[in-house]
Length: 123
Image 1: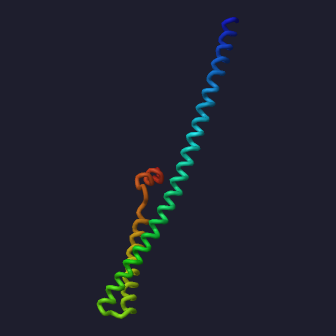
Image 2: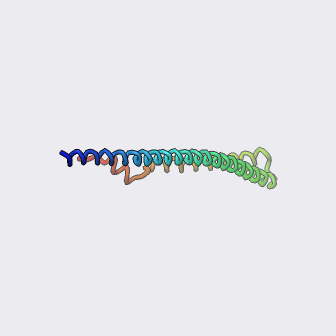
Image 3: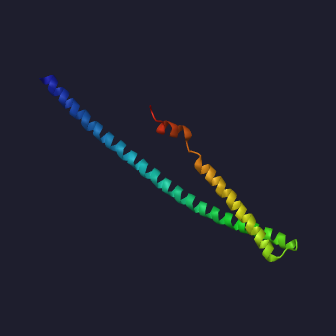
């Protein structure tokens, strides 16, 4: 009986020493998750800001390029309307090509091996 009582007391003492360690490990783990989430949020905001900046710079560069092409056609003694029409047609042609590329890429499956494994019908 004494040995059984001793083992129960030993178990309770071990339990009281392990519980604070588990609590401390869990709180440290939750703190790590909180820190990582905060850093990820900051990275997303930074990515959005730099993406918008990139977009604005790309649009302004494209506008400058269109303006330079327009001035080039005017310097060839073409009329303003004809120069604008040529620039418009070039812009429209690039838009159509870009749209076709997007359609081709969209129709290709992403992660083909994974899709094959997920949607493979067993017969």
